[in-house]
Length: 346
Image 1 (tube, one colour):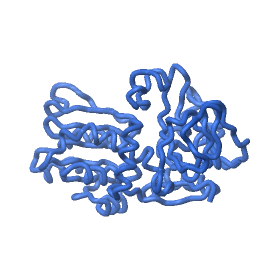
Image 2: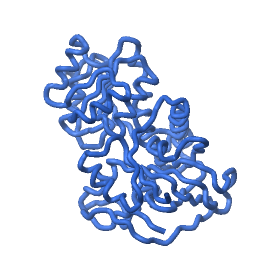
Image 3: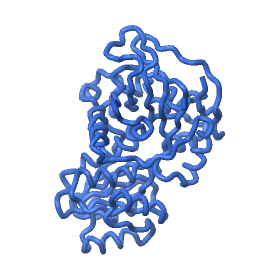
Image 4: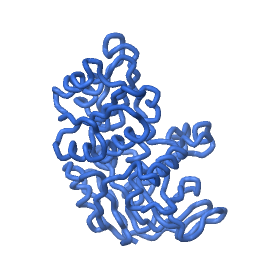
């Protein structure tokens, strides 16, 4: 089969021929129908050789959907040809967090060498992929896999972040979304679907802000040194009750803190390496700062339910497997409008 692999530190990913895998006991083989492209992959491919945590070559793609092609011994409840999506943050299945469906916070994954697909384990940007356990598959039913596959990360991650802040987002409140690309434009839709808050979107380009307005942002602000001041003006000097930073670099994290109101939640989702000082006087009183990771299995089901109701819709650009390297080039250049999806088999 063909797969997109990161094969050498610092090199661009390549489409290569690799053996088609076979499912072992408890495993499921998927024929991939759609695979999402994410900034996390760019981050992985920018890490230096010293301390690189994964074995190479690595098949990329941690957002995956497919049809069941075969199952290993001991797998029950799945039918060949069934359309499913992959829950990405795999865990041990036995610790207290996994028992609650929160495999994104598995307490033993590192110890046991368990990695998500595309982030250590072979990923979804291939004609076929192995899923380690049937519990990591969520039925898609009548949902279009190409439109839906980004929701496994670009939907689940902001949903988890927003769900934790819902008590702050009462009528009359304001939510700020920093970075309105792949995750951020979904976050705007989720905020509109789940809350009555006024949504202010920040980004560095008018194109991204136009997308934010199309998907429901009440106000848009250019993300620069003046952005926090403009948010304060729009909120009568109070600031926002919840701020979600989907970039996470030092300037955006600083902006997030400067936008926060008293008792606000600041949620740093982006993995750009920025940090926000916390201490008396560093932020308004009783501001909470969080850095969540992905989301739980039950939350992914909830995100799919929102999609079925038409309340969240990812803006998608489609690419063939041969075009996958180009998709990463455009993602790195910031020219993807929404989310890039690879269609390996069609």
